[in-house]
Image 1 (cartoon, helix red, strand yellow):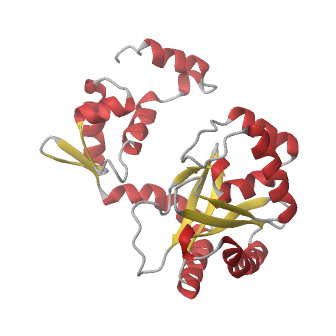
Image 2 (cartoon, one colour):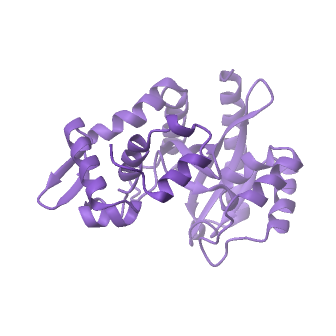
Amino acid sequence: MPALRDEDAAARALNPVGKDFSEALARGLRILRAFNATSRTLSLSDIARLVDLPRATVRRTLLTLIHLGYVEASGRLFSLTPDVLTLAGAYLESSTASSILQPACERLSAEHGETFSMAVMHGSDAVMVAYARPRSMYMLGGGIGLRIPAHCTAVGRVMLSSLAEAARTAFLEEAPIEALTSRTITDRGRLLALMAEIAAQGFAIVEDEAELGFRSLAVPVWRRDGRVGFAINVGMASMSMPMETARERFLPVLRAEADRLGRLLI
């Protein structure tokens, strides 16, 4: 077995799993995550640079992923295969996402002609677990599995606002608070005050902070045990209608759906 690089050995020492941590598995997952909407095909050198691993290590991992059916090679370029969806499918099929949340998003999108999604918190990000948009609407990127920083998104803010004040403060102290656009709020004091406001009013509206020209409105979905399970969101172009109109039109829709879904969740 090849010796660990110094940085990998240091990472293992800091990992609570210790020697039982599988670097091989972690490297394979890092390589799978290197592919995205703007990097659908990558060369060996591209991947090695993106994941900061030696070319020989990346080559061995790619050959394994090819053998397992998750990656395919075309000349000197590599890309993911549809079999990767089975990894996400395991989560979706074992949760409420496929049986309850996705159908709800599709129904709302068909009824109201806008994009609806639902997200859960994972680390410092909101992760989309259900998503639907009108068939007439074309959008690049987005969809189920999309990770977006919680601090500058409506879904993230409503979930963060459900935390106790001490937990909100701890999150803002530890999470990377970076600007995605020129309008992203990054001042931690201002964000803390905003979360208190959202907690009081029960919804969040974010415009131009995660993406210029895009507005989102979200409400939390409360479980029967008094915890927020996820957030439901409607997204639209900022110019499609005034913000007040969007709030008046969609806030009752989101709240009614959140109440319905909350009664279905344990």
